[in-house]
Length: 601
Image (cartoon, rainbow, N blue to C red; front, side):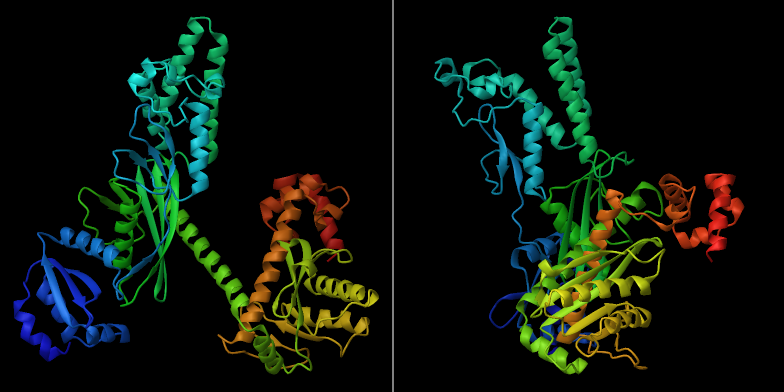
């Protein structure tokens, strides 16, 4: 639609709040928007200079405009969100979430059953959720089974059928998992009390449930039914242990709240949602949103909040956000925290969003690796690095240490452009005292290719050393000592900068950022990082490391760990004065440590 065409209809657009819909020449809705003043907002599309190509493209495709007047801006906001969700117009924010979330249903029937479903039906049943994890739902149902006796059968337990004695109790009754309503051994009122307790449990509201069980335990004790009292006591204990172990964060002040954070990268935004109930994070969800018209981050977050609260049936009155937004839901308080529990929750939400982004990137790397034409990438890599042979066998080395201690090395192997995980190797550094990245690299490279040579295995065409020129030179020394120079090409990869360099070269080699060659090298580097870090964590958790401090005569593991905990690294410990060390481990041991480093400096 041109500006001239629009000018003929501009005067017919009302100057009231509402929503507007843009249609293309096929009659399809391509954009839905809201406005405080419809005429002013719609006119802005045709009177302004476009900041993006996509906005210009949208206007060129508009063939028809429809609008709906509403009573207020909040009404316009929620109608816009509803229409976007219904029609998913091409140029609107697109919430990428096609999941069918699981619910826990309390069936509308006599003595209601409780079970998992993905398909809510308008049959009068009560649906609790949705939940972000099927595993979580199954765990909750198992938890309910162990604490509140409920029937699991599908018998038609009408009062008439029960009265006629049509049914007999099953094994679940004898196991104590059901009170036998099928034989009239449990009244409908008592069963409904159990349903109420389950509702409380699913909402994380433990207090009334424990109060009920304590009263029941007391009654059993008064009637000298000590075995039954002990069973109830175990239920109370299990309830408390379960919720304590399952609470992501407990003891949050301020009641129920929804916490949202957002991270935007170009045209993609990621919004994390923490659902906090009774001082506990009960659910967390991160969603990806595609934007098309450079919408401000405040608008994207407001839209996501509306959609996620609708999806998860949340009506809590407090929403925690990272910055001020316009969110017109009635009786809702928006909080932008500066400190305290709410700030910690917001930081936790951002941490979850960042983790989600990293997971997507990792999956994309693997997907790229599976889908590309590996031969073409390897041919390009051969051309870029001037290799004498096609690098069908590539290996990459990296060193890892923890706070200046516990050195290990890792090597990953790629064959024909894909990981060969059976050939991955870890190296516990054996010949190097303390932290020496160069010597550690030399040892790992030497041991790897000495073994391959002795076993007459094929050598790689390309070896990548993840580190600076010092590490590359150390690796080259190992190759020369093995007399393998000329049979393997070694290249260094500068950390973070992604520059490649060969031994002796003054200038580094910078490959095009999005080239297949650099993408493959990045993927290989990320693999060796993860492989090395995973190994390192395993070693630390098993306590199998021995650090330099333990080599000091008179200093044991506990003292060494105490020093590392306080000063974070061996390097920092070396720089501390006698008095600073003595404040942590006492004068005698501090003197031993100081003397050791003085004599070995």
